[in-house]
Length: 543
Image (tube, rainbow, N blue to C red; front, top):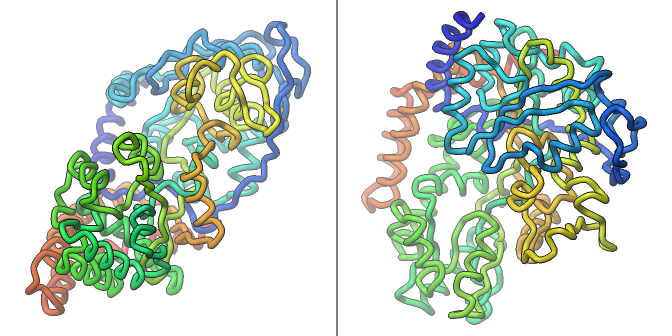
């Protein structure tokens, strides 16, 4: 078996390296996602008794599982990534107390985890639970029975069955192999609703008597007014280099998690974004901003440091970034400019939409080795997917390390001296929030405690439902993945070159656009999108 696995993994890693460029499963989602309505109630305070003595449901809603999970003490190994060692900490202790399963965690830093994982998998000595292989890799070793097909054990996995078979059957279609076997345990409802978007200096808008823009024309007028008041400024700045075209493409209806491929909901076919008329409209708009000095001329080359210097002075006032920046920038310069007020802003583009973050993601590859401990390991993952288990690994153990305050928020008496309790603190102190361990985060966790500015961003977009529909998650064959990767690399390189030339060169116009569309056809865009549409047909026809 070890020799077979080593040979298999050598092939798998080669295929994965080629397929990674395709980006198909980077942030998985499906426009038909459902949201499992899991009632999450606080768990009862645990007793001091040892494993195997608790009564069913002592620890809250287990989703149908009976604790303990095993009828005799069981030890398993779990390889995961994180900057702290969870062994001996609260989560490890509670797992053993509640389930009867002692976990020997093998934790490696994020910077070394992938290297350690590949050495471990290639050796054939698999830990009982691990994560980090791509879906294509898992299908390869799953076909050789090295890891378990999770949906072969539905009779002992009530939470998995409810969440991914009954309520979201698309998950197996999107991530399973050709025989309908699923080897990756998904992560459920991890993402916040709003995590990125346009943001603007509201103090500058108020100073100039301007209202927040409501559409693309209004955005343009605001930038013009800022430029007039601050002639030496370039109102719109960016640090995402060539990705700015993707960042803004959601507002033009031509983006998705598989960008530059995207699913057109109206025509129900996949298209290549960079040759669509909407993409030309986006380019024309950015070109207009560039020609009029409304966008930083270094927007394709700015580094985070140079961008920060512009956004924290009076050189630039509008940008696109992660919502945490709203407070980070203020905290950075509040002593110098206490009136600095960066706020989340309305999207631009014909649709006025932003990206929808997926509710379910199975691309992390949390999986279980096919050995004597497989059922114990699967049951443990199922417990951690339940409301009780989710609370444990993302909030803690009620009455042990946290209590609920009057507003319904978790408070940590042992951490009362700290200015902020975030997931990094909980990870270090209690072994919570380890990557590869949280499977269905409890939305009452501190991770979902927003600052006033971050909450404003959530409310703005949710109130108007300004989200682009999720694209289907397609399931490609190994041959398709390899072919997609090869073509996509060439297409993306050519598109990036054309985008920059079109915006920066005043002579570029309709004739150059037509030449680019023809060039994309020569590179292979028809075959590229044809593979997507063939996979979509399989997806639609599968049960």
